[in-house]
Length: 161
Image (tube, rainbow, N blue to C red; front, top):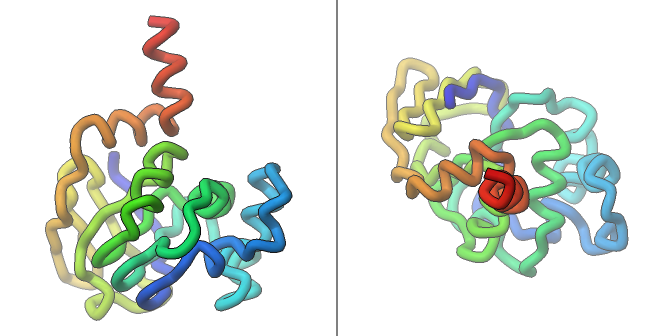
């Protein structure tokens, strides 16, 4: 899967309360969650981001509370991928279960907001601004989850097949 999009940079320790503030957790509609994604740091983010854009972050992205709302809010905006130096463990698993691809790569200092980026998710090759970086590989089973749009879709296909 090749992804191309514009970069939106966020720093270190972006917790789930930043990704989707707790006051919106009563909502289950992905569209509503997306409308408030990253609201504490960038209130206009949901209005400016375009489907296919990619989030780049530093260390410990997705730390804090274990909530599936966070990856749902991100994917509701059409963002297919987050690249960070490291991810919080529970967010990592929740993201793949919800169909959001994550790549671990230290590209934060190599890119800027608005840069165009090309990513081959299967190989982990990231190209941006003349740089080429190899991300930590995604395990094959996790790639299957992404290709199917998350764990529920994956299981449905397996049960139907």
